[in-house]
Amino acid sequence: MDYLWSPWRYQYLVNIGTAERCVFCVGESTQHDDEKFILFRGKHNFVILNIFPYTTGHLLISPYQHLADFSNSSAEQMGEMMDLVRQSKLAIDRNYRPDGFNLGMNLGKCAGAGVEHHFHFHVVPRWVGDANFVTIIGESRVLPETLRDTFQKLKGCFE
Image (cartoon, rainbow, N blue to C red; front, side, top):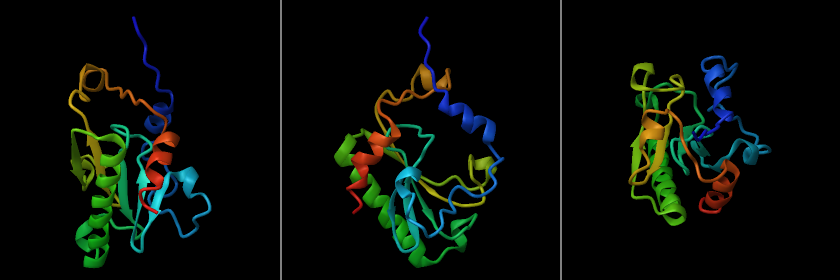
């Protein structure tokens, strides 16, 4: 029998709902952006790697402002967010050539929002066959590269 180990995932599971601060409230200091996997900072939003990705290259675009629902954001915030979604898709296309994408938001706990009090937009590259027995039944993800490698590949696409 083969075993797939993902010990890093345990920290996510045991810490759901216990964070002392919002993971999307990143502050103004850019000193630790590389360690936090922040790829780009815009005027109203930033682009960050999902540290618990569904697939390699899974990015998140989040506003700096702590808002639970995009309905409360400004047109300028949303305009920049959608431009960053477009840039993110192009960056992933250039580096990974996926077969498709899932793009969107989960608003509210019942809709699947893991962080329900700070909305964010998912850009998830998809490949034919990426949802298989391992992901659906085994509830495990097999990622072919480290987050650091993904960060290095995509970082230059936003500068």
